[in-house]
Image 1: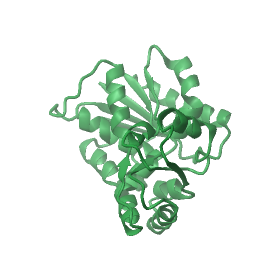
Image 2: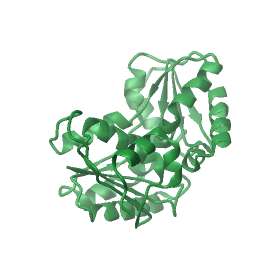
Image 3: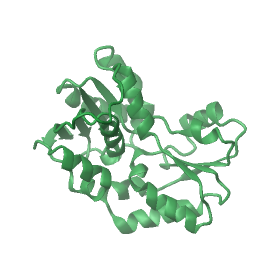
Length: 261
């Protein structure tokens, strides 16, 4: 079994790690676009074109499924990717976990990039899945970029700013950018310093499980681990970028699957 994932950068690591937790025997193809990131400020057409380029590079390795491990690309590129690649290659998008976060009744906060915060897409998800639930949209300027570069002071500063904008009575916080999942525990600690103790809702596990369902595979956590990891950076086969190794998810993937480069 081989699963491919695309993202602008290392935001695909949490979902890749989730795939490996469910199926240690899965070979992985990680295709990202460091030359073109960040995708958030780009036009929808540009995001779609860059996501397609990443997907085409990954598809050359004949995966069984492709995960768009990026909220921005899922919004703008999912129809184009499915039109080109399905039904031969199932494509799974990433949606912020607003529905499970709102299930307990709120209040809920959604941490997202400035481009996504207040967007028709996010407002539509709130209307569909959190109607009647007190919801606060929290922009997180600079956080995804800081995570991508593993800039510790910038990560702490961006998290502190977003935490200060988050109501203290929230019961759930949705991490609406895949990069944020890499610093989830730091987010939790910052919220506690502000007097909040919400549950953090992430997308990686649900997206990984959906990818397995799309190809008719069952979770097999006890399976023998695979040792195949292919890393593609803006179309070039490479090794995991150094910043990926700053995070537990990246280190685990590197240790279990020495990359070809």
